[in-house]
Length: 360
Ligand SMILES: *Cc1c(COP(=O)(O)O)cnc(C)c1O
Image (cartoon, rainbow, N blue to C red; front, side, top):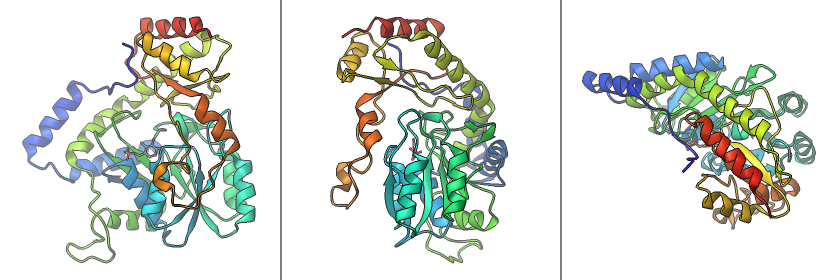
């Protein structure tokens, strides 16, 4: 079986966890701080605030900007559900834009169209999907033109770059996830990143019951603190991130150069892509046949995502627009194939060979 995901955990993580256990300080503490400092420095922003997940990081990011009840936030119709749920947790109202077919990312032209019609939209929440950066030239133009706050969901984009600049540094605030299938992990975990001192201070309070001084609660906050245990794994993973991303990029190159089936559209090449997923498109309504074929040949795969966000059942009573020209095409075509760092050359060659032999 060629597996879809495989966290790269080893002796370093075991040793680090062991040290934390020996210290007795397993909850949020100095190792959390060290990881926050290292990860924020790696991305290139001033502050990092560790959280319990990418989802809680997104929620805190939105609330730390002061967004809430009655505020409209424009986001992508095509992502993991957490990017929209976080908007709802904060009490704000999501509005959805379509994507571009060749990048799977939010379409700047659609952002411009929607915000021009709805000038009360306050913020834009973008997702660098599958490890590929959104079109940040166009997006920064639109952020300026329409005076929008910008939130970056970097849950799938650790180390991803747009024209040499790391994602997470463009927005007013960014959120990362460290779930085991992501490019680096802490088990569960996330981080809010920002260079804005006020946003950082609010985020820090929000994750710790709204307090700066112990037992003096200034706002209603949460317990979303990252533990020393999680952070100790994160520090080891950060050391390996460059290498792990390089392996993903090399694996993607094998697919780029090897897959030549005319029923398959390959992802657009991009220097800064960190291939959280290698996502191909199967044309001519052949996806069901294709995934059955992968099953028969013991090749793991994922369909990210079979539905757009606004059409999910949990939102059936929300007045969300349900139709999106490009996202509705893409959701029927996408298949992600294994690209994780631990794949062997023989496995990659096997996947290429099988995909090239797929016929109708
Ligand atoms: C994984 C993910 C999240 C949520 O992260 P968790 O750590 O699982 O809560 C948010 N947005 C996107 C795009 C994701 O892929």
